[in-house]
Amino acid sequence: MDNDRQKMSPSYRLAVQDVEFLLQRSELRGLRFALEFQKVDLILNDWGVRSTVVVFGSARALSPEALADLEKRAAGAADRQGVERKARWLPYYEEARRFARIVSQEGGALLDGQDKRDNVIATGGGPGIMEAANRGAAEAGAPSIGFNITLPAEQEPNSYSTPELTFRFHYFAMRKMHLAMRASALAVFPGGFGTFDELFEILTLQQTMKSQPIPVVLIGREYWRRVVDFQAMVDFGVIDADELALFEVVDTAEEAWAYLKSRGLRLRGKAGS
Image (cartoon, rainbow, N blue to C red; front, side):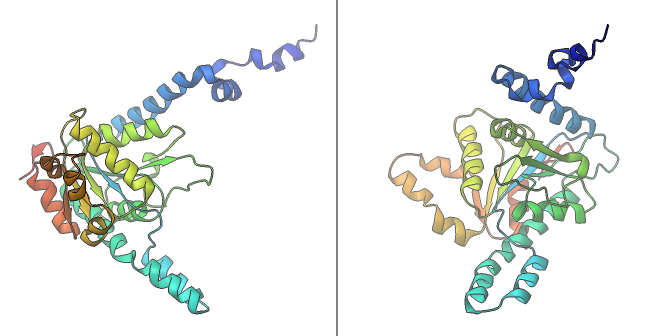
């Protein structure tokens, strides 16, 4: 007898091949969480990634090439003012690019005879500061990670993260876990809500001792001192004065790298000096 109807039924599909079943049933959320964790974890292990240096910052910063293109297309005064505002981001883009290049050259991402990679640059995988950091690592000849997230306004991965280490998450929580779990240090450039979300997540984990202590450095004194009054938080009693030592504020890539090493960042499996 003809059994085509039975074989075409969704119930007959192998569970692992039934995308609709896997993605749309709320009861399988735990399984989807586990899969998002396991896939990334296995691939990073296959690449020997033991630790990362996570870089956060605005997705709105433009590369020098994008800024030059914008300048060419600027027609009127309003356009030129817009270009000037966006040009303020260029130094941060270049600092992030240089920082990632230094970390990748000196931190252990290149292996150099080792079987594990340390301090591999990891970003949110998108444009702006994230692109700059992945770009700096690529210029050093080192791999770098892009932890992308699926958003209603779709985020495209930048072209500089290592393709085999370019991931996409559905769940913010799992993405945050992977950003944090291998992090040996955190470098934060000026940014908006997303940057602040990630920064204060890490600071909270440090403050509450729910994770191993890691150095946190904020790059861009003018921005951070104008945008966040950390001393006021002490004055109001919502944090303790000694908790200001959880991070340092600097201006340059070189200062940031020196600070991370002074705080004991591990280099190629050895404590930094």
